[in-house]
Length: 109
Image (cartoon, rainbow, N blue to C red; front, side):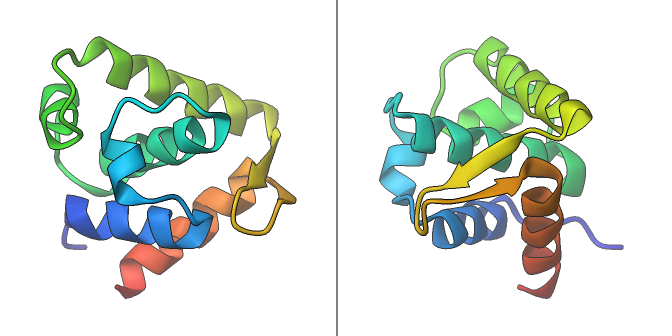
């Protein structure tokens, strides 16, 4: 399967979660923005050939260590099947379900 485009992942996650792209790319630290940014990073690693430094550059981050930390956070949430709140609807869903939905949506885009 052909790798997804980073822009497609970013747009899909922002649309589904109701978080503006400028917040995800910016330095905002609100819980819903951190969730969206972490999911973008996780999906970028999963669905593209981008390295951590390339993802950091795409998100306008100067250091890729924060990208690695975010990826590890999502991996841990997936392992524990934690519930996360979708900001657009305030609905709580298992993170595994959310990642599946986002992966499917990116594939269709």
